[in-house]
Image 1 (tube, rainbow, N blue to C red):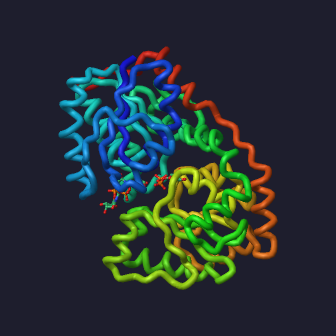
Image 2: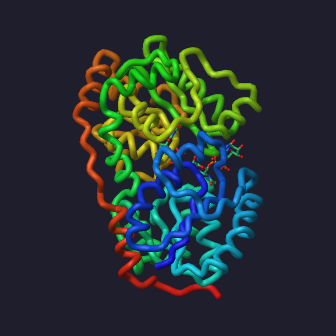
Length: 377
Ligand code: UD1
Ligand code: UDP
């Protein structure tokens, strides 16, 4: 099959790195990068680190409002897809690049394969929820990561073309897990980034959701990070450039013991999660990775589409929203100060991740199954 795959953001480069080897064994891939993310630390650096092929087409779209950004993607993708005449277009996740890839293809009658289909937070104020719903309803192959995602699709009347394949990102985490678990890894990165941290002696954080960039939300989550940070247990915040710009515009200064670092590479992100006492994040990817790594995760949101990771006292993650007292309480019970060092040391030493086999399954389903519908002109 000739397949155009469309990526554009950091998590999509990471997902493409998981799928690309299997996809290219069975298919011809034309690799398109919309350039939604464009800083080296958010995009370019992942090509070399993860062994991704150079894009056949770099659209250079960059940032902008939703209509503007998505519209420019559609304008660039339509002639490209007409000329490439692929048998399928693969889109990943729930970003504006996902929406544009799915919509441009479906309008041209090209079958769409959606990876991470069926996820729902049931909160349509999230741009990602709108992108997921539209991409799923336009897709011919729906590669669901979890049973709950399959159920969500069934509830919306979509059953044909749905295949539960497991989580693609687990494959990549499994591939590199042996490279991040040694205690020397943390020591080396602490020295490289000049961070005063030791195993289990810090909290790792990321924040980038649109809902967490309002003045009110930024005031709340910066206070929350300040409340859980301490001189002997600092918060290391790998700051998304969009969040940094929003904090700067609002002139918000981060509290003491919250150490801001640039966005990091994939292995560094995994290592910082694995060796932390706990993770605080609004990232879907980090929430799942922390579950696989076995590190307690406080989700700085009130909803989640990754329902398997939350729910009970034994679940790896808990939704705390921006509630300071809930965050303090959950940290006290899930990552008590007197045992965090030992917990993190044991966790890293015992880490053995195994791929769910999603990349091979996706490539083989694409090779062997006809698309469920033919749409468009
Ligand atoms: C996007 C996705 C989100 C995903 C996230 C992953 C949408 C609607 N949102 O959010 O689902 O979880 O990527 O990280 O598609 N910026 C830079 N440099 C960059 C990238 C972004 O400075 O390399 C800044 C720009 O000011 C830009 C802003 O961040 O306008 C927002 O970027 P954008 O790609 O629109 O959305 P994200 O917040 O990154
Ligand atoms: N990540 C990274 N560097 C960082 C922060 C996160 O490589 O500084 C990785 C993280 O390990 C995960 C992915 O980026 O694999 C998640 O992407 P992001 O949080 O941008 O988006 P989301 O998953 O919320 O869509």
